[in-house]
Image (cartoon, rainbow, N blue to C red):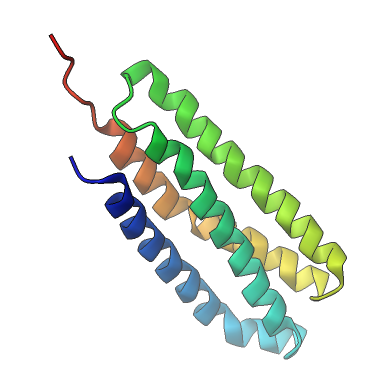
Length: 135
């Protein structure tokens, strides 16, 4: 079985790549719609989505090889961790005054949605693996 650190590293690399792609694709529209000062909000929003995604992967990896009935609650816990972190960090960042709140929150939502793909792939891959029962 592949090491948890290797799986997490691959997941983190994919999540970072998806985040970078989202930021690159959104750079020109964000500048055009909200101005140059919104670029910082774009980067901060993407960083918040990435941080929540990386944290949400931890419960999944800790539950490697669980019984079939335990996979769904663990996947739900991972989604809850991501959602709570995205909301909390997004609200803290929006209230900090460091970034324009509207573009920041838009990019928190976009990055959160975009990162659902690698998050789901990780959950499916890890929670679908079953270790053989010991006799």
